[in-house]
Length: 139
Image 1 (spheres, rainbow, N blue to C red):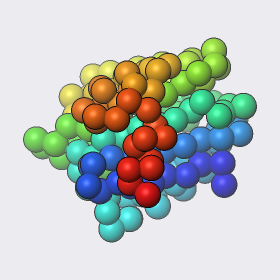
Image 2: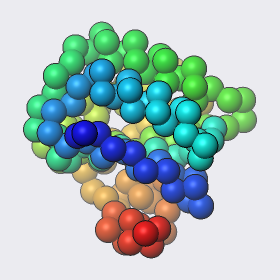
Image 3: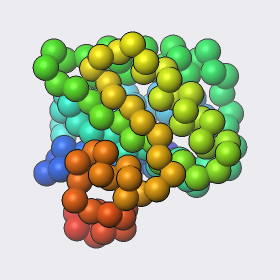
């Protein structure tokens, strides 16, 4: 599957990695799986790595409908969710910015787009400066 997620409970972090084509149905399936996972908790930080995406195969109105479903899950009074989108190409930057904007007006979710790992990890309040160090630390 070109979409994977790993919950790092000791860091309160979910690392989501896309590769290949982004498909809305796979994203919805993965989100449903995450929501049922025993380590899923309100307020977990989200690091969404889009750097290995080669194709985007969904319509943007459907993206906004999906984000509304996610907002229902993330809405827990007093528990904000930080979301860092990590992008690298013009297309993934466009996707990340669109996803980021879809959270506008939702006070429980603070989303930002980054092209630098250290900046994304810093935004999430993590001491690591690169993803490799983060994943090695938790392996």
